Image (tube, rainbow, N blue to C red; front, side, top):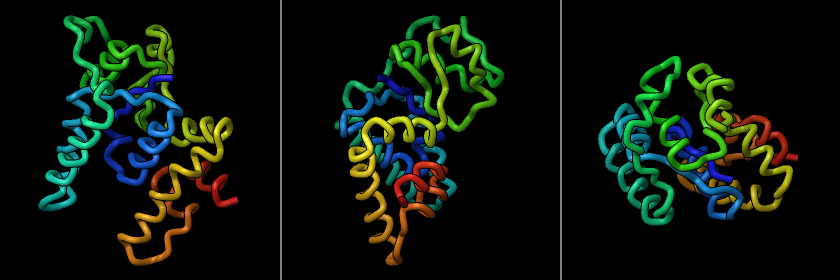
Length: 180
C-alpha cells in the first residue's frame, strides 16, 4: 500500500516519527513531493530560530532513507485537477503521479472523498490509518511507537505515557489501544 503524506502529517514530530516507523517496518510505502517537504520545512519557522534548519536536516535524512518516496511532478496533471482549495491540488497530483492508494491528511474538507474516488484514491486521517495497521500488525505498530515515546520522555525529562502523548499527536484511538 502506498500513502502520500500531506505536510500536515509530517510537521508534528511525534506523528511523523510514528508514521515513518511503521513505514520502516514495511507496513506501507510513504510518498511525498518536494513541494510537500518544503511546506513542512517552512511551517517550522513559527517554532523559533533553528527550527527550519532542524527540519531541513530531518528532510535530508528522509530523502536518503526513502529515496524512492519523492514523486516528481507530472507535466499538465495539476491543470486538469480541482479541489476546494486550489493550494492543495499539488498534493492530489503527487498522489496520482505516485500511484498512491490514499492521501494521509487531517485536511478532510479540502480533499472530498468523491473527488478522490474519481482518481482511484481515498483519504484517511492518521489515527484511522494507524488503527487499521495496528489491527493487522499490532506488534509492529507498538514497536514503532515505543521508541518515539521513549525519545519524547528523554527530551522532556518527564514521563510520557503513551495515551496522553498520542492524544496530543492527534492519535487518540491508537493511544487508547496501545495503553491497554
